[in-house]
Image (cartoon, rainbow, N blue to C red):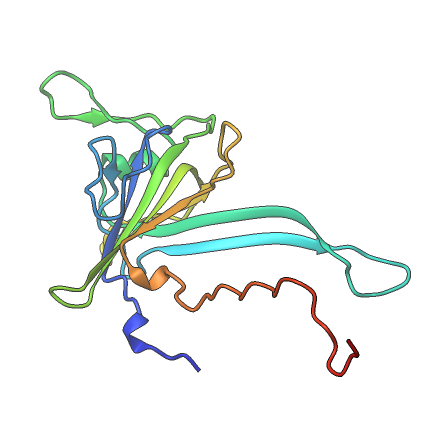
Length: 215
């Protein structure tokens, strides 16, 4: 067994941020995001749920019941969270491009229209989380999705019993320009490097004779 409690990671804090599509990938996991990014702020204690679903179907045969190979039908990578701040960036994403404007200059009264026609609202997305093990051992993780859209919204219940919550599921969209990169994971955590991989010894060269063979 290879048990190592020092490699247990706890995402103690983090945030989801959105930016216009085409925003470049951040240089690393620790550098603050540029001004193009808007953080969605506080979320519930459940944090973020990352899900990957690959649907595949085995081939069927007359001569055997075991599939010879799989045919891939779909792949889905989703990021889900429930946000607690009722602000422009959150409402904009929840309603697919909702924008409030002042009804009259200086009035401090605002109005937004919810369209009867849904439309795509593609964004770049970053999920940041940090594990602070000690004052000197701090690891940053950043999941960057170049193209994402809200695939599902949770019901928003307004009551005096809890804060307003805006639950959203973002789905990664296919890359453009011939790229195959659906998402990129950036980190400064050395635990992600596989140190157990060994290089196989090269095969012996030249002819070998059988033991006991005559000259």
